Image (cartoon, rainbow, N blue to C red):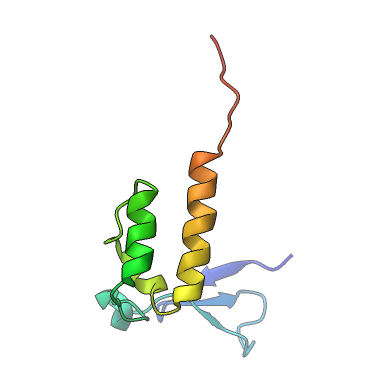
Length: 94
């Protein structure tokens, strides 16, 4: 089993093979600004109405990022709200 460590340049490397070229970057000091990789777009009106009709708030950043692909956003809304409205759980008693 390989063991891993984070070195001072913030790369994850295999300890048993430091010359391994397959480094996986996890974070560096330049990444501290934490800006979105996709722009926040306005959610299309029909999808805003869909969220409101389902009892949600259409102005959250997740929807604004997914608005880069309205088909994906629509599918996400269907998926997320079907989980919320059709969820069942086992009630435990103490």
